[in-house]
Length: 224
Image (cartoon, rainbow, N blue to C red; front, top):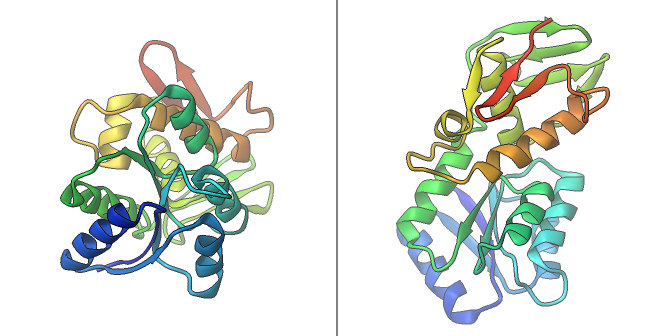
C-alpha cells in the first residue's frame, strides 16, 4: 500500500481515481488545485504524487518543478495530450513517469508501484569514477565530495548504466529495467532523464564524460 497525493481538478475523474486506488489498497488524499497540492505535500509528505497537467492556477508541470526544487518525491504526470512539447516539458520538470488519460486504474496502479520500487535499496557496492562516487549500499552519489541529489528514477538510471560499464544499453532495455515498461515504450522518458542526470554529474553536460550517447542505439556509461 502507498500513501498517494492525487491532484486532479475534474471532480468525476478525481472521485473515480480516488475510489479505484483506494479499492486497490492505497491511502489516497485528493486535492483539486496545484496550490492545495503543494500545501498537502509540505503538511504531510506522501510516498508519491499523481498530478494532472492541466490544473487551474499553478499547472501540474509547475507543481512538479516546485516539488522537485525541494524534494526527490516521486511524481507521475497525467496528461490528456501526448504532444511532444507537453511530454518533454513535464519530463524536464522532473517527472518520473507520465500517463496519457483516460487511464485504467490497474494500469496506473502498476505504473506507480513500478516507480515506488525504484527507491528500494540495491545490493551493497561502491565504485569510484574520477570525482564521481556511486554507493549502491547507501544509495548515494557524490561528486567532488558533495552529495548529488537525484530522484529515485534518476538514481535507478545511473545505477543501471554504471552496472554495465562500457556496454551500450538501448532505450528499450532501459525502459524495461528502470521503468519496468514491458512494451514498446516512449524513449522520451529515457532521454529526458539522461539529460537531468548529466546536468547533475557532468562538468559540462553538453560534453559528457560519464554517460555517452551512442547514436542510433542508446547510452553507455564510461568508467574511469
